[in-house]
Every structure is written in C-alpha cells, then in structure tokens.
Length: 485
Image (cartoon, rainbow, N blue to C red; front, side, top):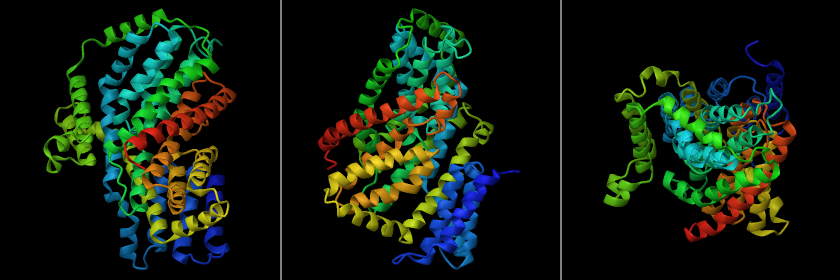
C-alpha cells in the first residue's frame, strides 16, 4: 500500500471522533472544532509517518478546501487553504535550503570542517570543538539541520573515527567514535536555536509570535541572532565538556587527526572558483540579514530577509555554482515549502476561528488558580512544552500543534511577550536533544551505531537540562541588557 494502514486508520479515527463524536464545547464554533479535527488528524498522521509530510500536507490542504471549514464558498475555501503559500517566511526557508546545496556541491562545508580540525585537532576534545565550530559557521545558511549535522558534519566525524579504528563493527566505538558522534549530534540543536535560518521550524515560530501579538513582536533575523548568540555560544562551549565528563573517549590525544585533515585538504586542492563564490554569497547574505546597509545608510536601504535569500540563490545560478537542475533536484526545499505552507495555514485558521483563544483561556484559568504568577506559569509551561517532545517525532509537528496555545497562555498570565517568545523559541530547539527520533538529524547519527539507545536517552536528558539552565539563565541576563523585558 502507498501508506501505512494502521497509523492511517488511527489518524482517521481520531479526526472522525473529534468531528462527529465529541460535542463542540461551549464558546467554540463548529468551524473551529472541525478545523481542530483536521489539524489533530494531520499531526497524528505526521507522527505515525503515514506518508511523507509533504504528501500529508497536500491532503490537509485538500480537506480544508473540500470541507469548507474556513468558508462556505468553494472559491474562498480553496483560497484560504492556499493562503499561506504567499508567506515570505515559507520562501525564506525553502530558498535557503536550496542555497545550502552549494555548501555540499562545492565542498566548502567539508573544507571548513577540515580547516578547524587542522587547528584544534591535537586532542580528542579539540576535534570535538572543531566539529562544533564547523556546525556553527555553516548554520546560518543551512535551514535543514539534518543536511547540516547528518549530511555534512557526520560523514567527516565518521571518517575521523574510522582513521582511529574506532567503529561499531570492530566493537571499538568507545575509543573516540562514540564521543564524537554525541558531540556531532548535540551541537545540532544548539546551532539550530541560534539563527532563524538554521532549522525549518524557526520561521514558523516567528510567524506565530507575530500573529499572537498583533504584529507587536516581529522577530527579524538580526533580532533572533543577537538574542540567541550569547546563550547559544555558552551552550556550545559547555556541551563537549559535559559529554566528555559523562562518556569520556578512551583515546584522549589525537595527533593524527590534524594530519588526517591536512591530507583531505590537500586532496581537495586549492580553493576553487565555486567555493570562493559560495563564500562570497555566504558573506553577502549575512551582511544583508544583519541589516548592515540599513544601519549605515537608513531604512530605505534595508533588504528583506526573504529578498536576501533570493539574491543569494540568483547569484549562485548566474555564476553557475548551482544550475536550475540542482535547484529542481533539491527535493527537501520544495518539500519544505509544501508542508510548511499547509501547517502554517491550519495553525493560522485555528487562531482566526477562535480555538487557540478558547484553549488558552481555559489553561489560563487552571494555572491561575494555583497562584504561581506569570513567572511560575512560564516555568511550568516551558517544562511541559519541552518534555512533551518525548511523544513527538517531528519538531515541526510539535511546534505547529502546541506553540500558539502555550504562548497565548503565557501572555494572558502576564509574561512579557518578547521574553516568553525567546524562551519558547529556545525550548523548541533544546527539545531536539531528547530522543533518537526527536528530529531528522537524530536517526542519521543514531543509525551509525556509535551510541546505544540507553546512552542516547541518558545524554539527551542530561543535555536538555544543561542547555535549558544555561540558555535561559544566561538569556535572562542578556535579554534584560537588550531591553527585551
């Protein structure tokens, strides 16, 4: 069958029960309740991996249009169902994924990683920091955290481990491979949280915050990067040390790693024309995303973040670094545009139809009777929001399902809008640490068999606490200095 029948049946039954069996609660319109049925059925189908997420998005768009939950007019219903595909945020992330193909095609991503290893690779922990630094450098233009951590960094990590004869096949993964695999993975959620363009769900958070606050809070690329830089850097500095203490490698010194990296760089040869162009486009995009022209010459010289992404892709096409065939073959980009648009549309209409407001007011009442105040409420909501990810196999599904409601509850209980947005945004990336199915990068690295299931879950739980304490703790100080609350 083209789909998984049991998960499909479960998703269908869940949707039908909500639509036809459970009475519409007081204060909720039938349209809002029916949209919830479609939404939850879609999320259940995504979690159950009934079909690829893009295919499920097409089905969701179809159902919203056919059922007319947003509008009785067929023409208006299909317009509503397709409304989010004009969102610049969707195209920002899609175009950035296409651009990131250049890092792989030109070899620039590999060169950056090997370069850091030649500098810091004399000890195992130095190799770990080299992989982390490479992950950080390429994060701003690789919105597919799976492509970054699993497609670029992981093959290099495996090559290094194999050069030390540290492999699962030989039973020697504890020599160096297990430690590097853990660092390879746990750098990924941290860098994902540091830039809007470092993972696909971040623009969704931006969109949901914007709508929840009536455009009062608009998280620009620069605002996000500045806000998350200090907490993220502290987490990146601590992470390899924490893992080193808990699961230390048997091999502490790696003098051969530097030679290994130098050999690979020599094999790659001189920096190619395409690599230089790719590096220039990378720098140009960061320059524009950071709003430098606007800061220097005024608002009329500012460039929108999505426009910047289009400028980058256009430059790569015109210079031949990427061909149109390369763009067409970047399936993950087109897939992201499709499913991202559908999920944003459904989440948006849950809000417009009043369901999110109804849900948040009920949760607000429940928390309000405890008398914990907004600080206690934020603590409770953040912990629940983060650790409920044990039940999710997709950060996108998690954020789509829960962010708007949790954010609305916090705001209604008095949490400062900007502060709470940053806290939940950080938690939405920290939760990737938890399981071997938490995000797309996880199964790629876990399936290389350097880390056992028990080790993965133990270090995941520990790193979630470390990252949360450091990120929020440092963030509270940093964000206060920035005047965000």
